Image (cartoon, rainbow, N blue to C red):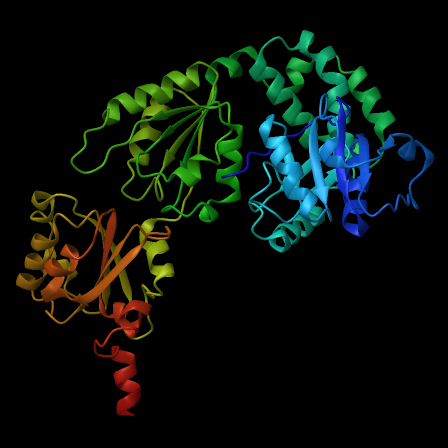
Length: 478
């Protein structure tokens, strides 16, 4: 993020506007809509204000002379649109005294940029692309425009009027947040969005017990709630809507080290973030300590999230955490995530099952060689079975030896898929007899191994000079 979104109060002082033509008039209209006072240097001498009402025109000071000689004291910012070479010169003056400046379509000479804006009164959404693609920003704005209710700004203003009166009746911050969440999501919020503001005002005025409305009795407040949330394999777009909602509602988030920074960015800004996970070769705080933290958070009345990479119920020890929460009588819920095996298969087009070819699917964890040595490899030799191995890079030699010794064909297609769904993901494909050398080509984990004929249908396999899949051979034989 190069440009930090900041909302300026344009009524605090004048904006210096320099430029000409329709470009400067578009900025003029935008600034006036935000309540700005404007000192305008029309570089072409055209001061046409057609379409503006008298109140808007009254907030425009038509400046005379050369803008390069203008007095810059007391200004909030300088904006140049259609100003030509004067834009660069004004930028130099502004930078010399630390004054924010925007030269339209010129990132080099700008210290701030204008986003695409969704304006709903008290609700304003700004979309930026760092100045690289205004068209993309406009397309995003169109989608947000379609999603937001027309009166969402009225709802924000309604809550703003009632925040101070209600704060005295709801002294606890967590209670206030839950109360307003229920207002927004409940019938009172629906009244405002339907244009029935007077009815909503009356309903809130007549509310006898806002603490009870918040759904937080004294007992419930001491118990709190813990959500076990699957974060998926790394791509933040693979978070479920329910997972995103839990992250936005959380007071505290206990997260694994494998959860990507992009997903951590989805957490509510003022929520506490506590890392509790571990990776191979790096000890963590231990499962017992994690269970204790979750129970303590729940008993303290907090809304806690246990954020796990992938899915918490697939080699994520979520079951152990649920048992601990049950025993402690702490309320909990489970939000599933996309496990790495499914995410990697989708990314690299590996059909984990395939008609007539792969009829069974087994998930296996073998993150240490000694674990791999305890596996019943004989149960995994069926050539119509796809085997997905988690945390198998270190144990790859034992996995290879175990399957080959049990009778699985050395020519079985194998894929090693690292950091799946992330921008730096990596895939290497080959056969079971070469598994150890395939793993050696992976730059860094985490990685999954997919073993089975279905790997020959994958995009990496098809892009290589490896032999075709069984189904393709059958088609060719026909």
